[in-house]
Length: 131
Image 1 (cartoon, rainbow, N blue to C red):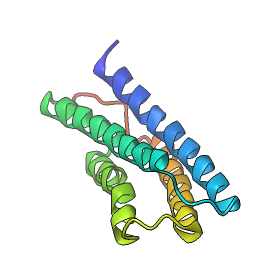
Image 2 (cartoon, rainbow, N blue to C red; image 1 turned 120 degrees about the vertical axis):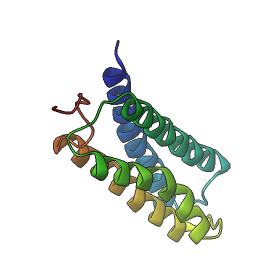
Image 3 (spheres, rainbow, N blue to C red; image 1 turned 135 degrees about the horizontal axis):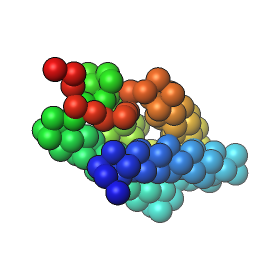
Image 4 (spheres, rainbow, N blue to C red; image 1 turned 30 degrees about the horizontal axis):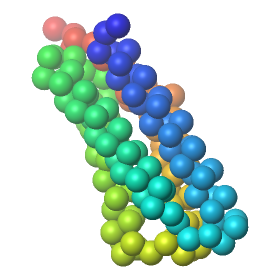
């Protein structure tokens, strides 16, 4: 299994994980429950998963491989790494219903953005640039 395949698997896992987080926090919001510590751990896991995917992209770039739109790739991946912890910081750790709604919207937006990256060939295939 090559780095291209590993990168695609991690990226797809991030999409599915973001959808799962969105469903989870939507249910919490619908029940007017506060956001649990388990969810905050899952948010950290999403950030780590995105960071690992980005790190693999950096390694592949250093090896000379490139996706078709490399600048767009790094811009979007930076967004996926920082936005969930960023929203937590912006909301100052709030765990009420409105914070849950904000996280639900962000989770589904992240999944849609990542899916769009796949559809527009931003994430691959990684190839050697033409000479």
